[in-house]
Length: 89
Image (cartoon, rainbow, N blue to C red; front, side):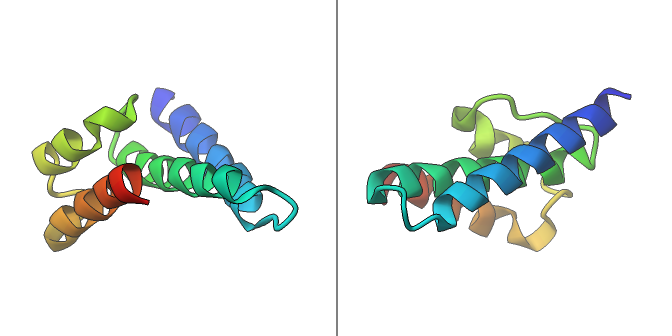
């Protein structure tokens, strides 16, 4: 049951942050932060579908690598794009 709760929670958070990111009334820094959060929760949705939970954004890379079957051949692209968003944008 935890899997479904986690999946629905992360799915809802993804939608809310995506909405904030798209809201042109928000400041650019707020929108950028919302994009980061939306991406994190979207990755969490994918992990939750596989019974996994990252919990902290600092663990995205290690979890995606360790559980490479979640994103398959796209695993490196996923964590690198997230890392770029976190550290450079």
